[in-house]
Image 1 (cartoon, rainbow over the protein chains, first blue to last red):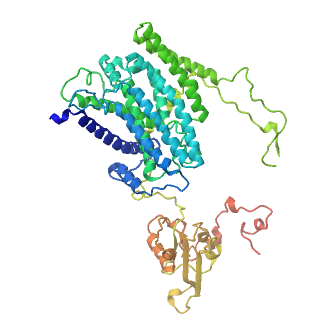
Image 2: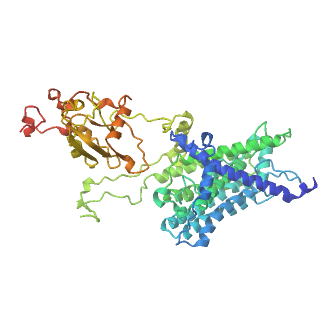
Image 3: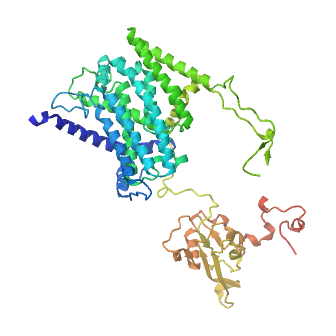
Length: 392
Length: 216
């Protein structure tokens, strides 16, 4: 088995498994989403293709492949085709440093991450996923359609705004673990046991990260870029068939990636008390570890999908004020708290009450902000008749 | 036209309390509701081709031409339905009933041909209401399909066959009054007029011997 020692072999296998897994999962996530939304609305969901509709993704895939791929005459063809390609490419690339099992650096062993040992893992992910906004902007702009352009304008404003809290929320983690590597952060949590999960030290950061990541993925309640009620289809109005599907492949891959990231960064990755400890070495332990991680990821995905069908969409000013007035100050103060705790060598458990205090503080500020300002000019009841301009 | 200032109602945005401004209770409350719908397993979906809908008794579907006790077409070719029809989808050719034929004993006229275009029809039920002898009726059949327009141009035989098909299924004879001349001609038992056809007190119809019916 000399040839197995070549790192390229294992990387190739990992790429194959991750890619196959992601593509299949994306197809079935769409089915799951349709089923979940149906159950929430007391419907049945797709149930005609195969038992319980389980072959629906295959039928959808076949349909999308065979559909006419329209490229309208008024578009910039190069950018129009480039848009969906970037969407899939960037989100897939981001998955390269995400560990999907107990990472191993031994030669000849399956690494459980496509690119093992990337020390700047978090930075890499943020750098690559922020490129995904190009797909939306290019797609919307190249469509040469006002609705698409409006959608991509919204997307750029939204993604740029939410990049900041997304990045800031994990600075605290990087400080706590003195590392930007996802693998190291994961193994540190596993070695510290159940109480080592970052959620106990950084609950507010978890909330910020999750919210910002959801906004980055352009999904409801943050899907202002493609809101059907206002913008027809937003940036993908002009797209059809497989190019349209690629945008959604990108979106669902993004959902998978952020679910993995949330599980790995805040919920201890594959670690679970008693059955999947850092020290557990019983035969088949890796299966259990992968299973635990996938379970956590599935929970996150289901949560994301349930949120989509539960919460109404934000208004654009609410979206912006949530990022700039809520999440960014919160993330900044959170980093400050972590720095103070580390600088003065306080016990780490201080972080929990301090985080909760921060949350309460932000809530109180939010309460004050929604109160009518005392000094500001209020809209007054006008005196005298108002003349309607339009009709006489 | 100016709007009076008193008519304008100014509504201020309500203030949010602490928990509302964190959004979390609303989110979890919403998740609780949607989650409960996921797990309760109740559905309102009808699995249509397997599960047929329960139609209301007054459902108006495909027409039929009723037969009388002797098996003859009940229609007397009075043209009331064709006149009442707002879509002009009924065309009747009337003919005189042969006097010496025992089959047509007691009948003066019958329709030689009775054609009803199911595609033109708007299923308003006016023909049924106009018919003085309850000969034409709308049935509960709703899944009417055809591959050509000609196929859905129902002639007398086809309309009579709809009667054979539906007379015993228990869904349709709700409006039928079996009898020689049907309910419309039994003046002793006039149905009470509904609000839609109620007559004003100063109308001459109201002063008639039998209210609602104009005698002149």
